[in-house]
Each structure stands twice: as C-alpha cells, then as structure tokens.
Image (cartoon, rainbow, N blue to C red; front, side, top):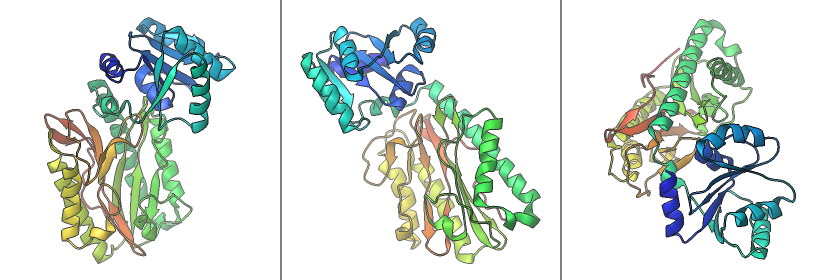
Length: 363
C-alpha cells in the first residue's frame, strides 16, 4: 500500500503528504490518538507526529514497524512545519475535505515562511481505502458477526417480553444493543443505532427517541458496531402485531429489490447498476418517489466512506470492495421498510456478510 501511495505522491509532483484526520491516521498507522498526524514522503519516510500524551505508546507500537516518531509541541503550526522541513519536503499535500479552513490557512502561512508550498487534495486515499485487504475484510466480518448476534438476542428479548412490549421505548432497544456489543468485546456502536417504530420508520435517519413500541406497527432497527477500528452496518424491519397490508406488500418489494441489487454487484460492472437494479424495481411497483436515498455506501474505518452506491456513479466494482445494499420505501404517516446487508466482492460477485435471513418476522 505504501509503495502505491508513494507512487501517487511522485505522480502528483509532491515531496510529501500530511494526513491529519483520525480515520486517515488510523488507516495508515493503526495508531489511535486524538491528536496525531502522519507524514509520508516520496523517499519512503513514514513519520507519526503526536503529543506527549501518546509519544511513549507510539514509540512502543510503531518504531518496531519502521516508523519514525516525532513529538509535537507548541506552537503547533511552527512545530509542524519544522518537522515537515526536516524531511526535505518542499511541496506538501493536505486533506482538503478533512481540515478546517483555519488549520489550512495557519499551516500554509508557516509553511510559506520555510519555502514549502501547500496543495489541498480531496479524497487522496479513497482509491486505496475502497479496496479492502484480507485483514480488513476479516475485521469487518467479525463486526458483522457481533451485530448479527446482538440483533438475534434482541429478537429473543422482544419475544420473551411480547406481552409487555408496549411498555418498551425505542431507547430501551438501543440500550440493549449497546450492552450486547460491549459484552461481546466490540468498542461500541459504529453510529447511533436507529430504532424506529410506526410512523418514525418512515424517516430514514430517525433519531431514536422515547417513543414507546406500538401494536400493529412496523419496527425498523438500523445498527452496527466497531471491532478493532472497523464498522458494521445492518438493518431489518419487523412487525409487531397485525401488519398493515400495504406495508406487508412493501416489505416484499424491498426484499426483492435488495436481492436484485446483490445479484447485480459484480466485478468490472459500474457500481450504479447496483443502485439501478433496486431503484428500477421499486419504481416499477409504483413506489419510486418513496425511495429517497442511495442504495448503499462503502464501510470500513468509517461507517460512510467511498464508494457511493448511486445511480450516477460510474466507478467500476473491484475485487475486495465492501459496501452496503440497503433499499427502502418510506410512506409518510404510515411507516417504512429498509433491509440492509454489507457485501464484499469476493470471487467477482457480492457475498452478503450477515447470516440473518431477510424473511418477514411478525412478533
């Protein structure tokens, strides 16, 4: 990976690149810190820059792996540019979409004093991060496994408490999932779990609330965890009591749309075809205007990362890509259905990672 990044530096005419976002720093170094930078140079230097709180940890973890550790002190921007200059960098790239304007302007000011030119880049690491290594895929699979278990345990909890289910709140179910993740060794949620009952399920990104569960209503659960820095993402929609007839029909439409999208995800094909496979089927059933988000997104260190699975994305699918497939239909005032799995492109086709079936569940 580093060889390819260095090749890209040379191609772009850069001597080095300063990565400042936590996801990029972790991706490159596997080092966790609230205040760290990675400097990569065209000569192959791998430099982790952090403050006194993390310096010993960084040396213990990274120096055996060939990293150089530099301590950052005040004043921040003067010290950063001193370190950059120390490694002979005269043309440096920065993460345009990851840094605040104030950071860029102050860094640029100090860099200019030392004869260093700065160049902002958007998505510099995207092409590398989109294609996961076997190690990364293994970590995501473990996160999915933990999520599956937590969800299945939640279903059992709901069945056991069926007679008093209307006493439970959306937040109670989210709390249950968080506890399950922590018990299984995960670092926590990969995003704030969405638990949405009734009309709330028609809001794709509903904020889990104090709303109590209701008889004869849909219950949408969108959740995920983090395992050793890598995320999972999973959604199922179940029904409490007697389901609304239209929502039952919608469930089958979304299920079929999901399966068509999975079948269309193949190496070498434009990723837009995955979105269109789901979207065109939903449109053919008359619900096109009620599917108001993309069919999926990449997952890795971040819960949302490239590639975007949408109808205008021409990017070709590659072996090792990992992304969600999550079509949905949302009827305001009534409810919604979304079914989501993470897939990995292995042996040229999409392999769903979750072992939880898409079968309809009525409590």
